[in-house]
Image 1: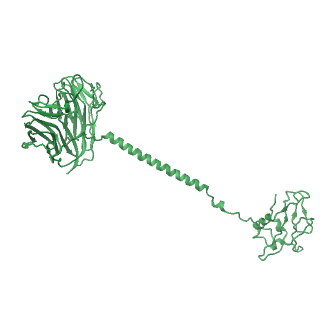
Image 2: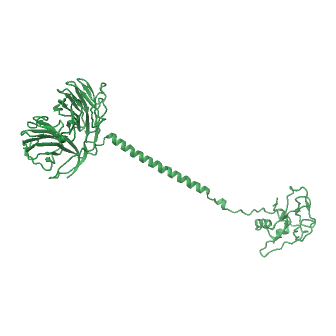
Image 3: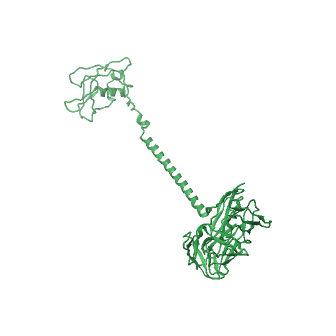
Length: 485
C-alpha cells in the first residue's frame, strides 16, 4: 500500500542521534566517524572538512545508538558484515537484527506519533557500520504543506551574549548565512506556529554540548566532531499542534563556539507557519535555504536482497514559489486573452473595410427614365397634323413626316436640328409655316445638327409617354427642354 509521505533523513553525523559511549574517538572502545577513502579538505583554522557520505563504525561490543523519530515507517541503513546486533522499538522486546541488502531494520504501519529506537551491537565482526535512518510521515487528508525558514535575527530573540555572522569556507552553499556565539549561556529563542520544526547548524572540533528547550521540555545534544560538517540536523520535532504557539530556545551549554545555520518550520495542515519574535538590531542574517525534505511515494516494504541508496530529495515548494508560479500562469493567461481580443478586433475591422469596398445597391441601379408631364392637351382646330421638319426654318432640305408604328409610337426622323433655350440666344425665330417650335441658331447663321444616337437616347427616356397624338401637338416638343451644349 502506498501513500503520500513527508520523508525525513537522520544522517549518522547528526547530533539528533546519540552514540554510547561516545560518537568520536577510537572505534575499539566506541564510535568513529569515517568518510570514503578518508578524504578531507582544509577548512576553518586547522580543521578539515570530510568529503562524501560519512558513516559511523565500531569494533567494540556493547556500543549502541538511539534516537527519537516521528512517522509511520522507518528504515535503518548500514553494513553489519557478520556482526550480531539487536533492535528495540519503543517498549517492545529487543529483536535480533539481520541485514538485507544494506537495510539493518525496517518498520511499517506504525502508530502515528513519536517513537524511539535503540540499536545495540552485540558482536562486531569485523566491524559494524551505521549510515542513516529514514522515516516517513503520512500526509493523511493534507492537501498541501508550507515551509518557511526563520534563520534571520528578525525572527530570533537573541540574549545572554553576543551573536555575529560567521563565514564558512569552503561552503557548500555560498549564499548560506550562519549566526555564531562565543559566549557561554548565549541563547536564541524563536516563537512560531506549525506542525514540525528543523534546526540546522555546523559541527566542528571546537564545538560542544548545547541545550534545547522546547515548550518546557529540555534536551542536550553534542555539536563536536573531528572535521567540519555543514548543515547538520541539530534538532527535530513533529506532530505539533499548529493552532497554538510554540517556543524553542537554543543555548550554548559549555563550548567555545556554537552556531545556528537555519531553522525550518513545516506545516502539514496547509496553513502558514508564523514565526514571531522581536528583531535584534545587533545582527542581520539573511534567510537560509530549505532543508532536504520532500513529498514521496512510500512502498509497504523495501526490496530485500538489494542495496538501498537514498539521494537528497528536492525541497518542497514554499508559499513564495507557489505565488511566482501562479503569477506566471495568470500572466500567460492574460497575455493569451489579450492576443485573442486583438485578433478579433483586427478581423472585424478588415470585414468592415471589405463591406465598404463592395458596390452598394444604389450603385447598381440604372438611371430611371426622366419624364416631364406635358402641358394640358390643347390642339387648335385650325392646326392639322403638321409635318416635323428636319431642317431649321428657311433651310433647304428634305423633310419627313412622323409616322405611326404598329405599337402606336411615332417613328423619329434620323436627323433633327438641336434645340436651344431662349437664354442661349436672345432672338428667337418662328417658322411661319411650321409648328410653333422655336428654332434658335447657336450663333448667327449656324445650326448644329443632333446625331441619331443623341436623339435615340432622348426618345428612349421619353418614349413611354410619347405617342403620335402628342407629336401632332407641336407644343409637346417644347415640353422636353434637352439641349446639346
